[in-house]
Image 1 (tube, rainbow, N blue to C red):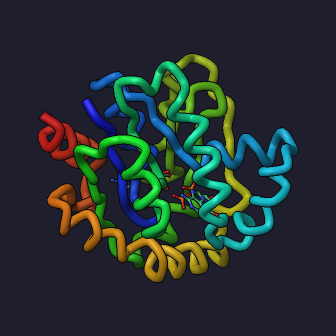
Image 2: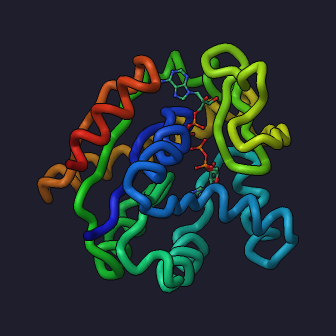
Amino acid sequence: MGSIVLFGPPGAGKGTQAHRIMEQTGLPQVSTGDMLRAAVKEGTPIGLDAKSYMDRGALVPDEVILGLIRERIQQPDAAEGVMFDGFPRTIPQAEALSELTEITHVLAIEVPDERIVDRICGRSSCGACGAVYHDTFNPVPTTGCACGQFVEKRRVDDNAETVQNRLAAYHEQTTPLAKWYESRGLFHRVDGDRDIDEISSDLLKLLE
Ligand code: ADP
Ligand code: ADP
């Protein structure tokens, strides 16, 4: 089995769907955003370097990202493949990735820009288990998070101003990857402007 790429704009629902696909397939989620936020929190040299890019919604340089990925996919749990979430985001990242591991599916979750701001500004997650919630669209159950110990987390870059920069970076630097993967026969689109369960079921069908 090879690896999967979850593709789409910020706030498309990649993390939400990754969590579900992980439960169904056992493939570990590899989110470069989560890895960078961990590095920022720990104050590592990579974290210190990445923070200024992340705070303004710009992409972190390819070499930094590729260093993280090379290390991550050597871990034992990645031997059977992984699910990349938020990576690759540039053509050089995709080219480097193709040398490192086989990609079997690129699953694009399509959501129009006008939906993205509402999605991102209402986002929270559980610091204990990683489940993703939304104040309106996917609230934390009244009985609490399924993991039993909800610890609310919100991201500093989830604000209306930074979202515009993140969307601009997505359109300029990331969308060219659609053609790149299409020409290799790996690209599949699903309509992400629907119910979370309907999207999951389409994604799992594509992976069958
Ligand atoms: P990404 O990982 O692509 O940035 P997330 O999975 O974190 O996106 O989702 C962004 C926000 O949108 C979260 O608050 C999430 O709960 C919410 N969300 C995800 N999928 C949907 C959907 N299909 N409809 C409405 N809201 C959604
Ligand atoms: P979202 O899907 O909501 O945009 P992520 O958690 O994927 O958020 O990314 C947060 C930030 O981390 C991005 O705005 C960018 O600065 C940085 N980042 C994450 N992944 C990459 C990547 N593959 N290449 C460059 N920068 C990245």
